[in-house]
Image 1: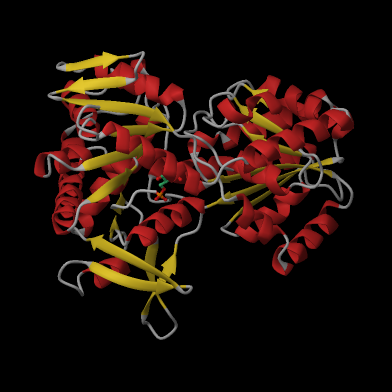
Image 2: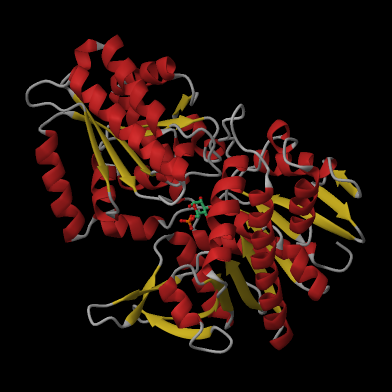
Length: 486
Ligand code: G6P
C-alpha cells in the first residue's frame, strides 16, 4: 500500500444523510464491498473521499460547513468526506440528464436508434451542467492535493472529465480513474457528436492510469482514442500518448467481499428468511435473478425466455419457480419507469398463461432487501444473469459464494464477469430467448457431479481476491504509470 494519502472521488459517496424520527439528519453508510475497500484505503492513509451531495439532506449537511469537509462516524467507523454541493437543477442535469441517461445508455448500447437520442439544445444544457460538476470535482481535488500530496482514485462515468480538469490545475497529480461499466463500442461511439467524443476521451486522458473491468472495455476505449486527433495509441503496450504524457490502460476485474457475504448468510436474519423461502418453494426447483430494475440487465427477455422454456419443456411446469428479486433504481428516468411497467405486465401475462392452482410460475418482488437476496442465493438451483452488456456484474460472483445446492450459473457472454467465470457457467447469448430457455433446461438437467464441479469452481474464482486487492493492484500500477520515465 502507498504511504501517500488516498483521495477517492465519486458521485455517490460512502455516506448519505437521512432524517431520523425527530427530523435530525443522521449519516447512513452505503452498502457493498467497493465502499468498504475504498473506505479502508482512505482511512489507512488519513485521506479523504470527495463526493456529490446527492439529496436535499446531503446538501443541507454540506452547506453547514464552509469547505464541505466532514468527519462522520457511522457504525464505529470514521469517514473523512468532502461533500460537493451544486444547485439541484444543475445536479439533475448532470446526474439524470447526462450520467444516467446519455452516458449510461451510450456505454450499454441501450439506444433505440430510430427514435433516440437526439442531441438538441437541452442536451447541450445538460452537458454544460456535466462539465460544471466535473470542474467542481477537479477543483476540489486540486485543493486537497495542495493541502497534502495524495494519490487520486476517480470513480466512474459521472466523472469522465474530472481527470483532465485536475491535471490542468495540478500537473504533477497522480491520477487513476476506474470505469465501472462497459465502454461504448465503435459504431455507437461514432454516433456521438465529435466535440463530445473529444471531450470525453481527452477528459479521461488527464489520468495516468485508466482502469477497466475487462480488457474488452479497455480495447473499446483505445479504439475511441484512435478517432481523436492528437492521440497516439500503442495497442501492444496498451498506452495512449496525449500531449507530453503517456496514459496507461489496465484491466482490474472487481471482486466481492466473500467473507462478509458468507458471514451474512449465517446470520439469524438470513436463516429465518431462508426457512420461509424454503417453505414457499415447497420442494420446487428455483430459478433466481437478482438485479436493479435496470434495462441493461435484460430482465424482460429473461421472463420471455422462461416462458419459452415452459412452452418447450412442459414437463417442468409446476416444478420450477422463477424468483425475481429486483431492487428499485433510477425511477426518475422515464425509460426506467416504463421498463419496470413492462416487466410487471410480462410477469402477469406469463403467470396468467402458465399458472396452475398452487403454482405461480414467476414471483416478482421489487424492493430493497439484501438479507432476502442472500437467503435466495443460498437456495437457487439456477441463477440467471443475462445482461445485455454489463461492466462486470457482481450477482454472479455473490451467489456461488453462499449457494448450498450446487446451483448452475447461466451467464451472459457480454458481461465483464464472463472473462473469469464463463468456463464454469452455462453461456447465454442475451438476445436469444429460445436458446436461453434451452440453456435453462440444460442447467436443470445437468448431472449432479458436473453441477458440483462447476459450483466449486465458481466459488473458488469468486473468493480468489478481495476488493482490497483490487484497490492495491491499481495503486501499484499507478505508481509505475506516474513515475517520471513511465
Ligand atoms: C451501478 C454501476 C456503477 C455505478 C452505479 C451508479 O452500480 O455498476 O458503475 O456507479 O450503478 O448507481 P447510482 O445509483 O449511484 O446512480
